[in-house]
Image 1 (cartoon, rainbow, N blue to C red):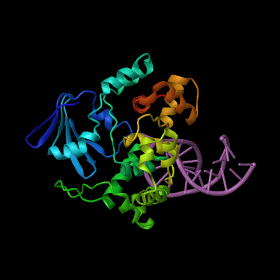
Image 2 (spheres, rainbow, N blue to C red; image 1 turned 180 degrees about the vertical axis):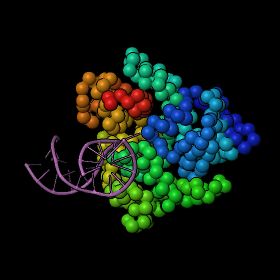
Image 3 (cartoon, rainbow, N blue to C red; image 1 turned 90 degrees about the vertical axis):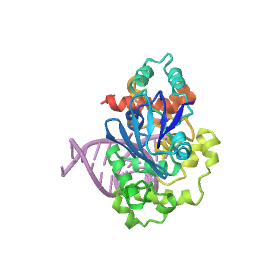
Image 4 (spheres, rainbow, N blue to C red; image 1 turned 45 degrees about the horizontal axis):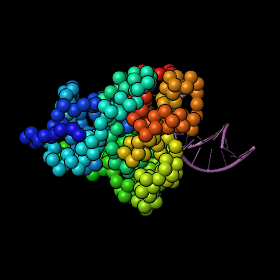
Length: 291
DNA sequence: CCACAGGACGGCT
DNA sequence: AGCCGTCCTGTG
């Protein structure tokens, strides 16, 4: 779908449409990217760290070879998907969505590692983004593995095998509070093979949610975030406080519970519900809708 | 000092 | 099935 070339030590995605790192990295789906300069971003994904350069047209992956690009970055950035088509479908006859998309036009849904997404969104509960980022960074620093990129303090997100072996005492250093026990138990459950990935991917939505909610500490909201943000399925509409507010304010005209909003979204957005949620969430939070 | 933040659990009705 | 007290920590 998107054309890319190798130039010296870099991979360049040419004339990359429907992307803006601010929109994509700050719409609440991921926590390990940071802007390091005007057009530069730094991030860690799986066993790789990368510097991205974005000039509004081309996306440059610095010091990246074809193998790593195809193995990690290509799927991560969802490069096979046509977001232009998704956006035009979503905003047809929907002025609210049209405005939200106009505002966050550069959002892409990242296909993140399943285990990392589970642990990250366990940590996210009852927390704001700055603290989530802080705890995750601490988690990586203490229990992740060094990445061979010249800088010793760049660490992977720790595996569930590793986390399952960390004692409660040790885990306290990341200051996750009462979420400690969720992290440990869920990590152990994942290691033991308790979660059937086939059901997550191929079951109906209700089955997928029930399967993932077997994990201790995972309720409706975290379950939906994991299904959507690890690229397992896209007909998912996670409802947090911001989405609740934006739906009340701009679609329903009144407060509604999770179940009602979920049904409304399934009816209105169908298979594209997950994309719709991200545009609406980013719009609501940046514009402080309902505050 | 208190309220609340991008929730979920467990016990109670 | 729904309600509610509780859970850690940081911020305002």
